[in-house]
Image (cartoon, helix red, strand yellow):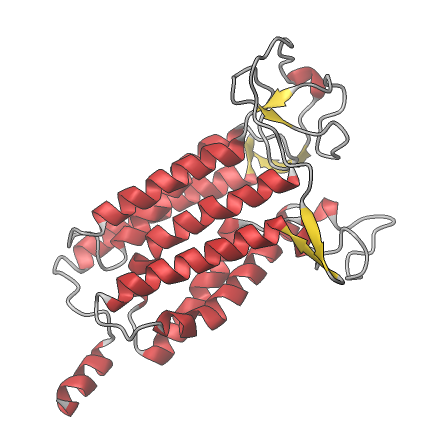
Length: 307
């Protein structure tokens, strides 16, 4: 069931708030005939950060410098495709229905209009991991080594991408009187009807930026320990990100399908935490020894034979 928060169910804060976080008045700019969206720039900046940090971590383990770019050529497009497909599926009423033409790329609100917002991290994880798996097999790199290397950069990229939601004035939380309440343009289609125009909202984008940035530091620290190899650091990423997402997702106001009283992305976040715990536990039993090489055994044997 697709649930929209009812105005009567939302708290109406008093209007004596002395401080707030303003939202940007623009979400794009023109460069000649092109329209550049800040949302896209935030996503691109996150991708660059993840690639640079992952390259640094992989080369320290003996992988050829910038070989991560070869992996990214497939993993990044598949991550974006997966993110969009997941979003469209979980918000299909936004795209399909009477009077809508979702397949026309020249109309606003089409399934192709990714620049308008609408990608999901859980879908990107599925698509990106599949693309990474294919490229790792081609390059003889262990998927577990790549996932552990990318974990800190990935969660930092997500922090960067959340600023795109700020520019789009979307995915904010419930009304609040806290001094860091977020201002939303009352003419914004996402502004809940019936609330006073000066209502402030929880800046869920900022909560996730802070949580993910802290997570990047934690993962970088944990990554120095041999225990967090064989995919276990990536498992810790799933636990950290999923735990935070459960909280932030629970206070968001954007419509979502609800299953057994919880938003679909809350269930996805719970699944991420559970999967992370399973990865850590399973890999601990399967590989108690250190992961000495990031390469698949065939590559190691070839290297030894060449030497």
